[in-house]
Length: 110
Image 1 (cartoon, rainbow, N blue to C red):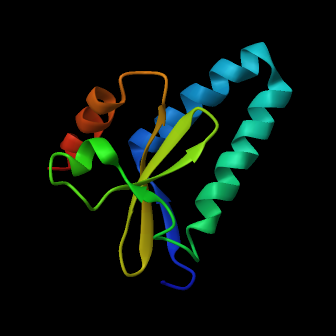
Image 2: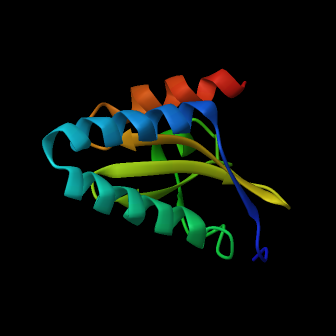
């Protein structure tokens, strides 16, 4: 366990979160706010418990084991951690084709 890691959102994760919140804001602003705080809480917990998420199964099948995920509602928060930081790479709707979306996003880093 690493104590008090710094959280970094990649540009892609920021875009994902913005899209999710904009979508729900137009339907139900209260729910959008609730979802934002729930995601924020999950992410902030990674400062102390960076290994709390599971390895992303679709990536593990491809022998890529450095990415983990947390689940919040219908969303998968994909991240990796190092000695001083936790980087959030994507926030993906689990109702979509996860393998294609996650691999497409993560492959940008290779």
